[in-house]
Amino acid sequence: MARLSIAVLCVPFVAALDAPCYKDRSFDLSGHSALIITTSHDKLGDEDCTTCDATGVYGEELTTPYYTFKDAGLSVTIASIKGGVVPIDPKYNGSLTQAASDKRFFADPQAYEDSHHAPSISEVDFARYDIIFMAGGWGAAWDLGASDDLATKISSAYANPAQFLGSVCHGALGFVEATKPDGSLLCNGTHMTGVTNKQIQQLGIADLTPMHPEEELVKAGAMYECKHGILTDLTQNDVVVNGRIATGQNQQASCQVPQELMTMLQSRLGAVPSVVEV
Image 1 (cartoon, helix red, strand yellow):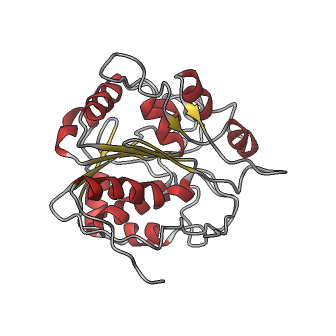
Image 2: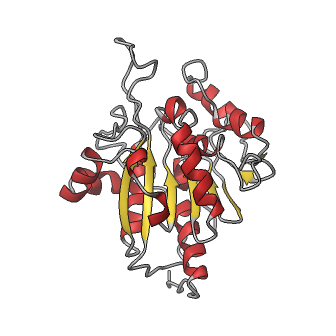
């Protein structure tokens, strides 16, 4: 089905269009659980920078998966690299640029609790979760791909055939140091996507952020896929599924990637996503 996109990519230039969901799927996954992992880095620069703009996780890449999972009956935990208050990029939290899921999240006492008292990834037993999803945002360029603890836990989850893994945008950096059971890089030979080099250049952050998803995925051996535009890439998005891994090019995949992961889980449980009339 054709989709309308606007200039979006981890951070939009104009009023956001809610990330599209697949309209032919519904889920009942009560009794199962999802873990959303976010950055703890809150500056567009090194930690000791005193003049850098604030950043963090891009709102919709946290809030849309949070409710996509919750509305399907999943129990959801938000964890960050260091724990504590999850930094949500403040630049595009105005009423004109908030997605519907953002508005719902910021008015939700439980979401406030979940995002202001998040456990660190070191405190979380990843084996307890059916789905593990890594959100992006510019802060993730500093810590997701640099976390040995995250790489180790993603590696263990990948080794468990009952767990499903996904990411959106810069969240894909959480895969780059993870390994397969044979010791090779998890990305090696895996079809994946994340925000493109061209897109971060067009957004003007290529010289600010230390790790670039396209570059790092390719370096790790991934079969990198994306969608390109004619004059600009900023309206382009892609969702790539390879085995038990689903990745999205940018925040416009924030509903579809969680849906892909839930489809995998529901299939493993022997159920078929029911059709919703639209």
